[in-house]
Length: 77
Image 1 (cartoon, helix red, strand yellow):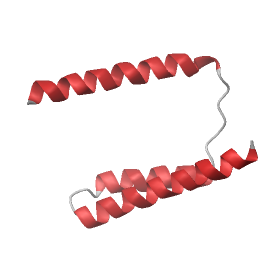
Image 2 (cartoon, rainbow, N blue to C red):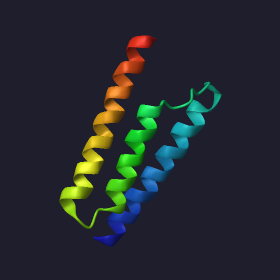
Image 3 (cartoon, helix red, strand yellow):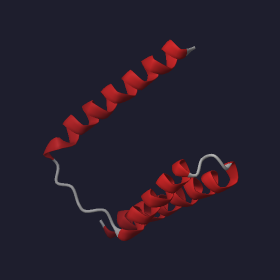
Image 4 (cartoon, helix red, strand yellow):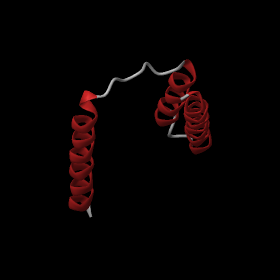
């Protein structure tokens, strides 16, 4: 089972590198405060992952805030 996870990690790494190379020429905007707060909550969820209720709550709130930020920024364009 372990070699399968290693293969999945390698494929994910390759996909990330490909996406970074494709998006290289595009101008990137700075993330908004809401997106930074959402990412911080996801990181806190990972850190406090020992307690499932707390960890999943942080991750869920962070994802929700990030989605709200995406919707708000999409309407501006």
